[in-house]
Image (cartoon, rainbow over all chains, first blue to last red; front, top):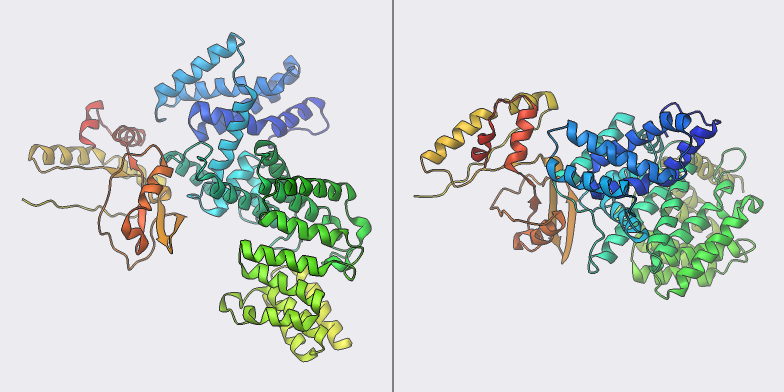
Length: 424
Length: 137
């Protein structure tokens, strides 16, 4: 969190822990009660700042979450009293004052299920399709993940004021256009949930395979995405894809330390030092996958997690069940046809049935003008050409892939492979 | 007699310049009052900025929702609807039902309520009495 909090101090630890554990829930509920995103966020911020002074003086409260909730509500009331320009001011003030009086009488404010609903409402609002994708990502990280604007800006390599403007604009659109604060109705839910999962996976991928810069893995984004994935499994435990996505992220993340070798170079799956894999995380990922499978509704994340599980559980690339993986990619292609899935299927078939079979599947993709600048296609093409013994064609495919890569670590690996081609 | 639509176009400016414009609002109020007295005014409303716009297109049976105003310069304004909706989701759903969404774009822009218009202008320093709200919409 921001503001001069000293990490070694137990009181500051308590504030930091409350910030981490309670902020999203408190914020989610206050947004509903106050009916205004910005007002609620400012009030929650005020409450945490108040905690920094009050807790050292009065001691850490028995229930830090309840303390923050009450303080934030009172700050919202103060802000509403002060700022006459806020819309529906009288109604909001009346509602918050009523809730505050109720709290004073020590009546239970909200049962567990309404708190769960508030966080779900918040997720669906932050990931609303009427917001541009970068704004959805930023808003989700800011409100549910509890990252500061500066941290999000650094993670996405944009200037902090740019990121700040993006978030402010998104919140203003939520207010002005009346983007609803609710869980979508049953008929819209599958579509909207898919949108939410896409945002979470995008956050994970941005951390896992950074699109820019020289660090292949930005761990903090992976951690946030997994935390969001876990939250979704708590909030929507009956949805198979929610479990599928969490499993997929865990299984990828388990290999985080092995993706880059000691020299900072990219290491492909078969070249990774398997002793660096996080065994506990893999076990978590596999249990999560079982939970997804038990719901008996295969979806794209679940299928991808199953593919990753097969790769991880095999002792090495040679002894991997490539025919089964090729089949899973086939199922994925039927469910959600995309050139990326087709490419992966071609690679798996290349390993299951030989490079010629892989090249046959790759052929139509190479003719697709939309994929002309897709680096992984050219890297895979080069690899298949090398295996079939066409060194000249392999070299030009590697050169094309190198030209297209924006990640320094990936570029180094492609250059190494190109060099090995000439040497061999 | 015929009905005419007067479409007001302007550049979206920074907050300082916008505040200057807000202070001109009494002149709008005066215009609206005189138009009403002359029996010419059918309706007037202020739109929120394009930052709050959402564009809806239906292509191949699928509804595409994008953040922002319509941006295809070949498309021109052909008509309008004013709907009273619970929230943006309902407005977007109805927008997708407009047949022109299949070949053109339906831009969904929230209308600024008269009392908000009054509040925004006053905050920027416009000198407007409470009753002005009657002439703002």
